[in-house]
Image (tube, rainbow over all chains, first blue to last red):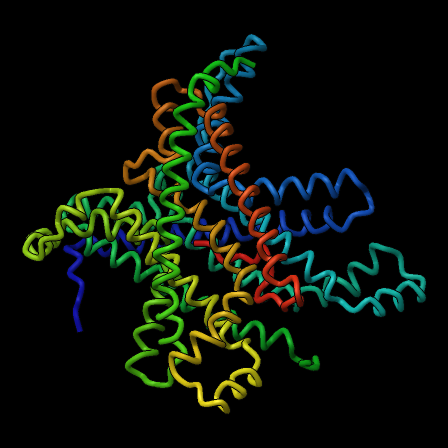
Length: 231
Length: 240
């Protein structure tokens, strides 16, 4: 067994891992929110909502994450400054990389979550919706009592996928200088001149997150099917 | 809004887009060649074959592409004497080589997983029929399993190609002047971030959907005589 000598920089990687998980969880919460909104838009009766949700997923899936991160972190503050300057105000806006990172990753993976939720809503059997209508349930009550509780079961595998891709995407936030796992490994690699050692160690941390996530996903899925027939 | 900077930079952005396309196609092709034997090894019953294939696929699908890119580009420096001795150090000094190597290894792992699913989905009856006329081993794979599996895998593979196209933007981080790299350099000089990043984003958007349109056509043509059941949904998250 080969052991990795981290030259006293191990703590930095662990701290980076903590920040990576924090950013990942924050972005995932945002992605679920955007995903529910997006799915609601895509399945809406209103043309404008469908168009807006369609544009959202189309644009996000056609543009690289790195471009979107750079656009949010560097582009949005200058855009605001330019607009303020035109209105005659001298404004200096700086985005916090932590906030910008969560917002961008959440926005990107919200588009993927949108597709997951749309599929999940449509997977709830139509006759249950019809039965609820026959009982005289309104749209909101039907959503709360019939659709949402059952939709989660169909959405879980897809959401698990989104999470596993999302947590790897957080590595990109290192380009806007947030000291998460990737950036910490980079700093340690430069200081010790042992790039392979530290990037390999970082990759094992990411692999660990992936494997743990796979195990947890399996548990949650079997839990969500308790009391339901597997067909 | 003053868009002069975008028009001025357009030729250079398009030059960057050419490099983006080049890196994408080279890596896709090399990745596909690597993915076929890996997928077959993964499905083998022999430990010596499936275990390395499983480990390779788990590692490259379970870690971020950026880490893999840094491991190859910066990490190789740690083994300079060794690589020098082997006479390949001059390759690892080149960002282009490191980028293509990493993207190839990465996409091959995802493609092998797609192919694995497609090979499993080949109807048993067709394989049994082939066996009954005495086909086995490589011949069976070449004549029956792979042609069918490729057709089944096409929709998922189109997705993978789109993800790879977008993933190539990471090569700008190791100094290559692809579409993203060009945009970043112009931004650093002109400090007009949103105009240039939006322009670059639009070019990516056009490339992506042109590609999707073409491959949809191809899919329809290849399955025109009878509609195949596609493997994996379009738009399922399988990125990095």
